[in-house]
Length: 284
Image (cartoon, rainbow, N blue to C red; front, side):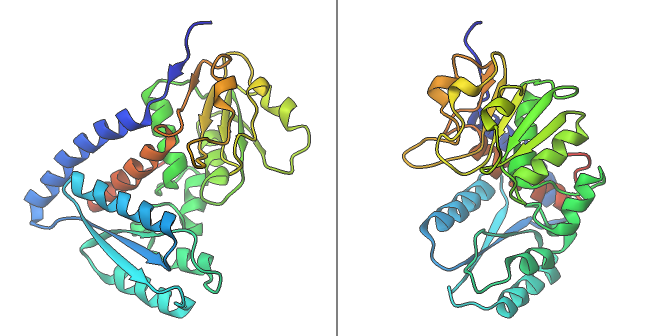
């Protein structure tokens, strides 16, 4: 087996941003308005602040505006809901991102679900998830939707293949599984408590690791010729897969960093542009 294909999310994100810049310019020329992505950050978690800054920078690269709403860590659920209501009512705000996680005193699910469906460009609402899972029009959760964009770009076949998704979070593992089912893959959902995980991974044509544990998935588990998508990131730069040992066995893989992460941000921006254009994605 030759050298595996590198699924370069960083390069694809740059290409996508170039296309989005053209579309944003058309929107501005049509009505004189610049689409705005509103980001809400509650508290002072450094990693969350970095992510919000990166998303703001991506907005500027494509000619969009970013409105940063920073709230103190003591914010209540009611106060956060009021902020979301105000953004829902603002016609210039085309997308709303509530940075996860929020402080523990806040009902995060209630706040996610308060985001208007047409502005749920991060794909976090229960209604959006339900529509997406049923194959109806809705914005998919940004990370799994970005993974699909990446797999499509590199023409990775999904229909009929066996995909093993490791992780069951409501914004990554669960929507990833639903999206793959919608694309005619046979999907097994695993997690940190799954018995016989090595044997299940060894059956997979596609492995999506999103469990949040450094190098939990060992390279020796990977079936020869499988595609490996590593959605984890842990300083100083390792993912959820033991990539050094997996690379000689797989046919394609996402690097860490530079694979899934850039596609998450690019997809968030793309879905904001689609919202401004009055469109939502179907059958993600």
